[in-house]
Every structure is written in C-alpha cells, then in structure tokens.
Image (cartoon, rainbow, N blue to C red; front, side, top):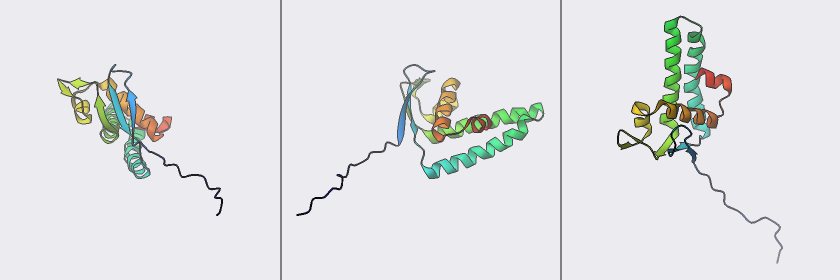
Length: 132
C-alpha cells in the first residue's frame, strides 16, 4: 500500500457573467458577459478600428468631430450588444428591458454605465477608452 501525497482534486467553477447593480437606475441589475480570449481579440480589433478613426476625426473640422462622437456611440452600442446577458428590474415603455430595447429606447445614462463596466472588464486603458 502506497501513501499518496497528491492533493485531492478540487473542481473549479467559472461563471460566464457578472452581476452589476446599476448606479444610475436604482433597482435595475444587469449581467455582463466575462470575456474569453477570442472575444477579447475580436472586440478590441473592432473597437480599435473605431478608435483609430476617432484620433484623426477629433482633431478635424466640426463635421469630423461629430463623426468621432458618432463612432464613440457606435462603440458603446457594440459593447452593449455583445456584453449584456440580461437586465432585470427595468421596464422600458412597459416592456422588460433587453439589450436591444435599451439601446433603442432606454436611458442613455444606463447605456453609458454599462459600456463603462464592459470597458473595465475588457481591461481597456484610459487612452483606449477615450478613443472608443
């Protein structure tokens, strides 16, 4: 009989979403997806394209600066569509909130809050956040 000194195997659990209580819409809770390596690459490439365009546009004419602002909103929409798993505790025009409904008719403050939470979870630094 051999004494085995190997530790017992303990199973690890991974939750693919994180629960966040809204600070802008009291009572609302949203779940954001935890990013995988492949998703991080795809999202950062897409957001990076918008960000690089913004660097040039922000220094340009009023029309170009308006385009930069539009790209920032597009980046937030992209993040919300990708990263929000579900929303609870919020109705919009009498309907339970969904990511699509939130973007189309929901409170802009909540969209900003969610986009910021997703940027944080992606590990975007301040410069990357500014350009997205």
